Image (cartoon, rainbow, N blue to C red; front, side, top):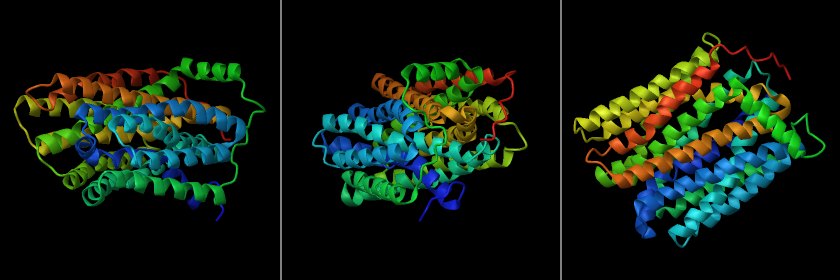
Length: 404
């Protein structure tokens, strides 16, 4: 089957490429306590396996975009998928927590290929005006796999052990490799003759000096820091403090993923009626409200699952409003450097996401008599960051009308 750009099959591939990175992360969260028990590791060391995955994912963003601008999307994507599959299978045989921490960096490097090249493939096929709506529908579709992943991970963890989650993800990566190998042609119409580091740095520097570009990627990064910080802290609160099993956690966490899905759906309805920049500017208030709610519950000594998951749903809803608009705005204005723009957007997401997990892990060690307060204290600066960085979009000129 040939994956013709703009076809339903092409969109399905974009969804799948964007999904397997988040799927790899979310399928793993229900079994994190089990990893600690099996490998005789502390919760903080187990959280580092999430952090190192995101660091690898963040670093990988720097390479795939520029390489695909030079050599084309297809060969670079095939290399990334192959590397991801190998490192995922290696993770399943990790003998110690130190080995798993190291392998997760490599797995993240491979997983970055899907996120970066999925955005670049979108820009190759659609016009600037089409991108917010197209990316919004793609983001909605991408939530199907990650929303089911915690439930799948919980069942796999109880039936076959935590290593089975890596077998599942490895099979998914293998399937994508075969599909791309057999069905995807080259889509990059602007391939450069060579990788010119100075030109790359100039192009990246131009983007990073662009107030509008920063106004898109910074709120995106801060939102991911909030969401990944929650992912690092919530499994231990629900399982080790409140006594939920991995399977029960997987079912409960569907609510928070449902918040992201609802936010994406609402964004689909708003696109065309409300400007994408206005949506980004105001979405941060949902993150602030979520943390205020969680703090109020914690300070009132309300220790129950909905006092944790409820705010997580609201926070995820706000992120669902941001993601598609921010990615479209960041990548859409630079068609000839779509890969590089996608790399910088991805670096903001995963690099700041890793900061969120580290912050939560450190503050959890410090502790508090209020179980959720380390989350609130650690994540509050990121919520404020969304509001402040969104202001960069105020008063900026409209993006160019680019049709290719």
